[in-house]
Amino acid sequence: MRILVISDIHANLAALESVIADAGEFDAAWCLGDIVGYGPDPNECLDVVRALPGLVCVLGNHDAAMIGEIDSEAFNPEARVSIEWTKETVTEENMAFMVDLPKHIAVDRVTIVHGSPRAPTFEYLLHPYTATLNFAYFETDFSFFGHTHIPTIFRLRNGYADLAVLEAPAEFALEPRLMINPGSVGQPRDRDPRAAYAIYDTAGDRWEYRRVDYDIAAVQDRMKAADLPLKHIQRLAEGW
Ligand code: ZN
Image 1 (tube, rainbow, N blue to C red):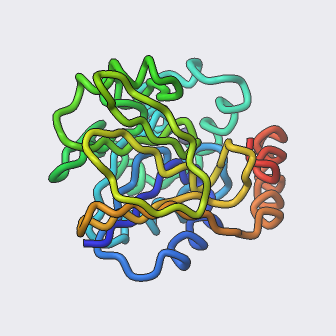
Image 2 (tube, rainbow, N blue to C red):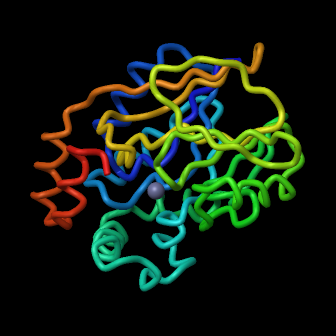
């Protein structure tokens, strides 16, 4: 089965559409959270994600703020502005979809979370030490996570997680046990502004990590028109 793995779309429809067009045929889509927040098209992104085949999706921290599960005070001032704008913009139907999302879910050999297996919605997996502790919090061979917006892989070797930052394009077999991040569709933070995603092929556990161009300027214009924070508009062009 060929599975599209996407994370941190952040209401960036142009990036999401480029990813889907680039991905080719896939049997299912796994979404690792943060469909909304920052970007100008939350409803359109939610509509597209909800229509994906075989969708498995978990709740991200921005999604959680949207449904009122966490206080937007927990975010920095610019993120808060974006969250409040999104709250006013998202339809009731899309809100109801987010309310029903699980925080973590195991599908066959993979545990799917937004942040980390230990604290699924909030924890950032950036360092080998944190990652090492997290291997005790899931039982499957693999965990797919997002939240950091950086394509990374943590492999458990002799009880300790080693970290590698991935460079696109890359294709390799996943070997137990590991945690892997496909990067961010809508707001990359690894200095590469192209949309990031992965294809997970369950035959041979192949992982294909890809980057794809999209019309960043057009998204920036839409953000300006919606009066969204300048910081989030600027960062898209540079990928930070
Ligand atoms: Zn995010």
